[in-house]
Image (cartoon, helix red, strand yellow):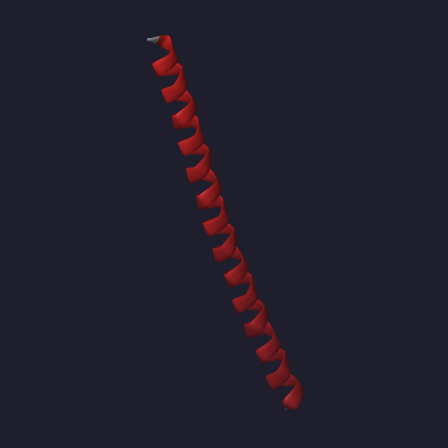
Length: 52
């Protein structure tokens, strides 16, 4: 029986680890996307001001 309990614990730990990794990846991707859009907006602003 201890092997079954250990297997279930390992499996649940692996699931929790995978969920944590996915959450971290989504946060990182959101930051990168937001940063890229802010940078692009800044560049567009520079072009608009330079065009005047």
